[in-house]
Amino acid sequence: MAKERIYIFDTTLRDGAQTSGVDFSVQDKRVIAEALDRLGVDYVEGGWPGANPTDSSFFQTPPKLKRATFTAFGMTKRPGRSADNDPGLSEVVNADVGAVCLVGKTWDFHVDVALGIEQSENVAMIGESVAHTIAKGREALFDAEHFFDGYKANPEFALDCLQSAFDNGARWIVLCDTNGGALPHEITRIIGEVTKRIPGDHLGIHCHNDTGNAIAGSLAAVQAGVRQVQGSLNGLGERCGNADLVALIPILKLKPGFAEKFETGIDDEGLRHLTATSHLLDELLNRAPARQAPFVGASAFAHKGGLHVSAVLKNPETYEHIDPALVGNSRQVLVSNQAGRSNILARLEEVGIDFDPKDRKINRLLDDVKQKEFEGYAYDGAEASFELMARRALGEVPEFFGVDGFRVMVERRHNAKGELITVSEATVKLSVDGRQIMSVAEGNGPVNALDNALRKDIGSFAKYIDDLELVDFKVRILDGGTGAVTRVLIESADGQGRRWFTVGVSPNIVDASFMALVDSITYKLFKDGAEAP
Image (cartoon, rainbow, N blue to C red; front, side):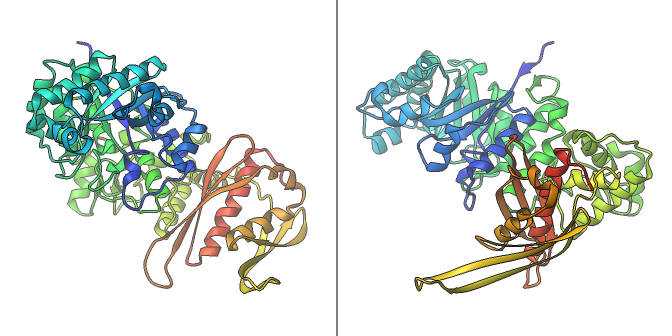
């Protein structure tokens, strides 16, 4: 029997961006969108064009997605305006996207009190907005805001709103549990009524997690007939968050009751990127990944020593509900030095490194990675540093230059105009082509000064780094106290359109930054084929 298709709609960059303390940059959004595309989701909702400068800039230069449909979010037209004459709607439907998701009221209370219009006008507004979106050549989705509350209050009106969107050509009608209060049994019952009027293959579900039931509610909706599931990476979102796609995706793809009935656009290779994608988001947000997160957490497949470990090694399927490698994770046997080997080998393959699994250097590399991670390094969000480390272990990266030392001074003083300013100055000593070079430069902060000094004179390699740009800089304190260990993540880019991340760890933030900067330049030289002295 043919499997039914489930479509995955990610809203990390829009709904997830409403999380307290989360402030995505344009570059953050681009990196996450590309990671989601590699994972294999069907829709990536980029944000709301025109709502803020970040989203407007992001949509002006949209990411180049290979599989996912890039989607804009907005609202239906305003009362008293035509769809053609609504500036907010126009900015959304004219964005360079394949699909548009429009949110509209489906709870009579909101229509009567918040909008203050006739219920029939609200129904017409939904249909006109959807039709306008389709006329602009965009796939239309209608996000039925507070649908479950609206249905409980006035079923006929709530269904009329859905019907208006469907009759005017909406590809998807998304049933949104906006305040997260609907329980799974309620979702099952109500969707059973909805499918009497709207086909399930045109219905989606968007659950918030205010009762801790977002995943359960989403799965109940699939069983009840919906064929699109919305959520975010790591459950990001306002208040208690959204349904966590990092847990939902492997359930739909691997677990009994779903795997044999449904299929998604995420293939086996994409699923193996799940752990790395989850951790990448956490690195960009400067926060530690949840160790006990289902499927992708460091403790998700961790086992303590003793008889239990012996049993795990002999019969892992009895102690683990799936093979951790399927989602890009690894078994952590805390007394075994073999923990993580398969994961390391898989990552070597991903970055295109040829190797012999029996090579003793692989074992040394595994030990080095484990030691580095113990010290605070994290390579899920710093692929360039991992690749350099691996290639160095295999003897593939030459020493382009040596660092003899560096010094940074930060001075706060009054300038000639009497203004109080802070000036950073860095001195770097390098050994290049058999000679020592000392460079001094100022910058906008100590890291920028170090970057400028490093680039100022790098001998014969200068031509390779002319187009190198430091794009982003993130710092995270790994433990508390004045002597805390600091991890620095640097994002770099070049004129060839490449982007890469490097990492440094040290109790000294400047030292950690310098490590990441040196890795960034070395990676650039290696990728451009620079010849070592």
